[in-house]
Amino acid sequence: MKVDVPYGREWRTIDVEEENLIGVFKPADIEQPPLTREDIAFSIASPIGCEKLDRWVGPGKTVAIAVDDNTRITPVHDVLVVLQEKLTSLGVKKNDILVIVALGTHRKMTDEEMKKKFGSEILEEMQVISHEWDNPSELRRMGNLPNGVPILINKHFIDADIRIGIGNIVPHFTSGWSGGSKILLPGLAGAETVAGMHYYGAKTLPNAIGRADNVARELMDDFARKVGLHMIINTVLTRDGKIAGIYSGDPVKAHRKGIEHCKRIYGIPIPEAADITIVSSHPADIEFWQSMKGLYSADLCTKKNGGILLITPSPEGLSVVHKDWGDMLACSSKELEEQIERGEIEDVTAASIALCVIKTRETPYKIALYSEGISQEQAEQLHFEKVSSPQEGLEYLNRELGKDSKKLVLTHGGESLPILEG
View (tube, helix red, strand yellow):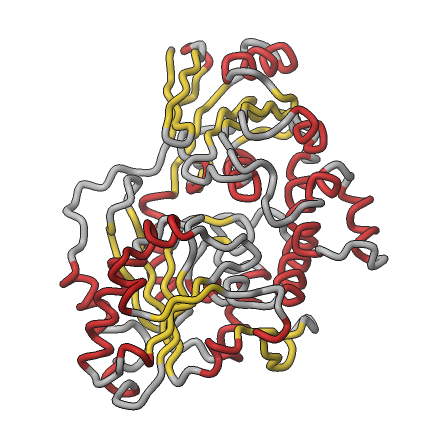
């Protein structure tokens, strides 16, 4: 049976023997009209679990809005236009509104990416700056998290009278789900804070996808409480990027309500675990730092000692920002943890994310990688078998695990939550 899977903006076809195919799985198709500007305005005006903006916004107030970058498909422009109208109607001047791109430890967006994400109108009418996570002069310390990690936050955000976060909710391997307080940690946090959160999560639960009660999310929510995140505006999107739901209000209560909706779209019932899972990382396609999300989705529905075929373009390689990541990925989990504990690694965030990848592959799985953006040397660092086509990858896993192995396909592994039935 020929199956098409997304590969960046293109498609790749793989022929899977039908008698051994459990199924081809993707997020649900939603049969509803996309939400309008009026729907967004209604959500903002009727927040969940917190007071309305009218109660605490007015003339003379300054507002900082944290928004995610081009590695996320959040319709930031659509939300910002409506939010700006609401704020100015309450007496806030446009030059008192600051938009901060919550990069976390990602690279800065190019001018073209900024225009595509925010639109010329937003860039011309509003102040838009990028978070500088590695610049101490741009950060402020506000105590510590419960695990002792220092709270370092973007100073421009914390200096504003009103602080709002815009994001999108999808399954996520570190925080269980994206959105909510994640817009601040790691979005607007300092390098040391981001590293501490990720390492804590990597040691305790390297794949937390779909779980809202994990340790990393607890740190994020505590961070947002201490910093003072007044309100979130989170979207839930259909598989083709249209707004299916919008949840505004308290960073925890509104976020958890949004998760309930999101799970109905991205939670995928799987009848049984597969011996071999074929997974496209789409829409997490830019670099392996992002496309590894496909690996965690596959982890939830693949038998131990099974195989995973990861299909991802990753045109920017392993990671643009974290230059030494490949060397970290080459280690065993024991070796890397020991290096972190001995203080031998400067980039602990990258090491922590590497630890999640390593612990997942050590399940163990045999992993084949089809990617035109990842080199042979990098694939060897990952301990993956690099293949020249998806079909070659399946043939490799068939040789290793048997042609009669049960298989399943995840077409949108970068945003899927496989749920094994029973």
